[in-house]
Length: 273
Image (cartoon, rainbow, N blue to C red; front, side):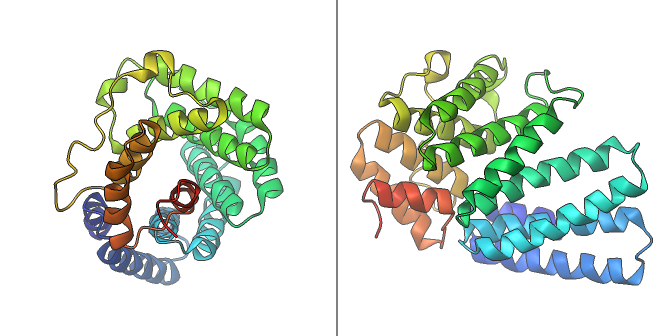
């Protein structure tokens, strides 16, 4: 229940409240694990609690702490896999968190390590059932891998490799029959793909993905998702609407939003110091 409350605070971009709740979830989960270390379900929930905390820590710019928590979450889930190799759920959840960890390592400047991890992760995804199902959890997670790959490659100057991974993302997203009904996180991935492609080729034309996206529609709302405002800022920059982009940036910075990817974007376009 506390984790859901934390997610609700994130939907309003109330990062301070989300952080407090996530810390409490982690403390309770850690206590439960210490009390009953043999209960695998409790250990899994502890890994989830660490993951939730790491997400908020990343959004507030505390990437080093996020890396530590994700490393522990991955370690817990991998130990569960070792104890029960037939449990595909544990295996996939560990894989998804390895993707998060690789991206955070890249944000700490460990780009070579991040690329090595992403290469291993991409190979592991090849054997997951349901990867070809449009809009499936596995496919959404695979898109995250490809986007993380493209971001790191772009930062290392590997433009052709970044284009390859972005083309794969665009292909997967354009074939999704539910693309117009995706949640704000799916929308954020679509906008990120557009933005990275725009950086690479200088154009915002992604074929079937060039449809109007519902970002910035709630700009007058007092509370809205950090992810929505982040996406809106990038779309406004690509569309040459600087004043609107500045408004989104102010909304986010006033709430302590400091996701490293957003900070790079913000500085690159002179929207923040």
